Length: 206
Image (cartoon, rainbow, N blue to C red; front, side):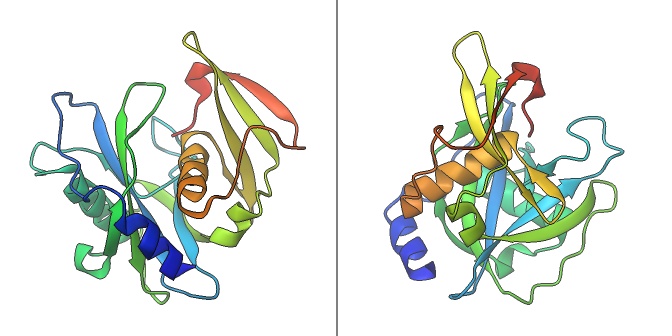
């Protein structure tokens, strides 16, 4: 699986998304453990005390800072600050296409490998938990429902998953599904046997 991941990502554009004119930019890291048998994705649960997206599951990352030369730097810096993975311990494989949240934030996703025995240091002000989900769990598409976010310019959908008590939904789930479809041809689509839930646009998770 890791060989396929490296081959697919090597064909994507260089990992240097440049900062545009808008300040509404962010970057995230899909950090995957370096395991041939059971690679897993690192996810976080945001603190319940935060004023925005409190308690939601997200990927390590955050807003671009004017001191960041590019969005790759943003992804690695924010990951270091949030979960304690130093940039030099990330084998950066490539960048995925920019994705947009319903608030209009342009998010640059990066994919990198980390050691299985990586020790994490969660930022207590931002996170309540750090956990792993095997990629195979998502590839099997074990969703509990399909979320449809009703917007004026058209609907956006995302799978929703529950793993060991953590609910993975909204923008994060949509980004993970897009990654798996693009790299592994997972075929995660709107049609599924799980129930469908409609949301107003502002309900979209980070």
